[in-house]
Length: 254
Length: 254
Image 1 (cartoon, each protein chain N blue to C red):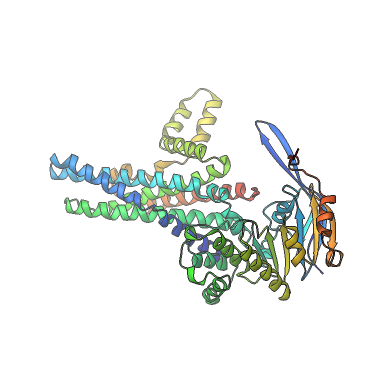
Image 2: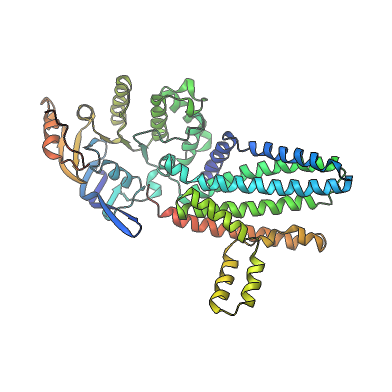
């Protein structure tokens, strides 16, 4: 069974300024299925459509064409959000709250019963290594601590599907290793993980399958047996599949 | 309800931590300065001057605070992307908006209540007799502030510019004190277009005549009916502004 699927999904961003309308293609006829219980890696350059695809799943954007289904329900759907955990590329958290208050807020929003909420908050903060800092304001947290708080809010309601948008960007090697361990632990617990990244080596280590996005289209899907024990397979597939769409040229060394 | 309460709690906490209560210090300064300026007057005159000065300062500080806070309320959360994480949980956009608005109104209301208590105490010391009029005056000021808060929130979402929303809110605040004059002009106008335009504008802008306790007091202490009419007007105007704000907010993609 599929945990999520994109059926011929297109997304066009329209911006109008002084009567002039400009259109940018975010996604173009995307067909993609992610099975329940697998770790799926979404690879692509900047502007390839990874974040657009994730925002469509979370109901933050609406598709221009096609349908998006998550856990058997067509999105946008508020009810399905109670079964998804989302960790964005940066910790978009309100810095005036403490770690405990932040998780209390997200626990309440995720409909965790009030009798169980406090214990869940403390347990989750301890699990991500913030037990000692739970009563400090987020404005006093380091980048790594904020990223952990962001992961904690994504997991506080024990979601079936976890979506991570470039979760290792800017983290130190130790923190990257911990995120990798976390993804594998989630897989062991039977969760589905969708993991968008630029980092080929990381995707190679944790994913069951990968999808390469280029210019808003799915260029290729690969399963683990295609790259296991064959170094550089993903990198070569990636280089041959993607087209630069971010408007920058190659670095010249002459 | 749980969601609205959770958003309300964190909004109130956020405003308190951003030191909204410091506006009360400004109020104290106004009263001390006013006290010094009016110290040469006879006791009765002095109390009356202090009464007018304090009520006007309380309302003006409440108004500036509510416009400033509500104009930034959602736009800032969009800019810092904190709204992403809230809306990727099972939260209706209308609940989020209502919780944010009520939390802000509560923060401003608490500040106004603190200023009001301080002012009332000073008036008692100056020998002023209350007869219940102070609570009514405060209630009317708060009604105006609530209406302006809802209107500023709507303007911020419709115009998506903080500076433009603040300018429009200030302009509508002024217009709202001249609704009866607009209707008078409409009756006298020979042009059908001018009559229609003036009548429409006089009904669309907030009609602060509903909160004019001073005129009502001159005709004898206002009864429960007058108070209920003011409260219903404030509630209805806020509800209309919030309903329109929800419409704008529902269409936003983040």
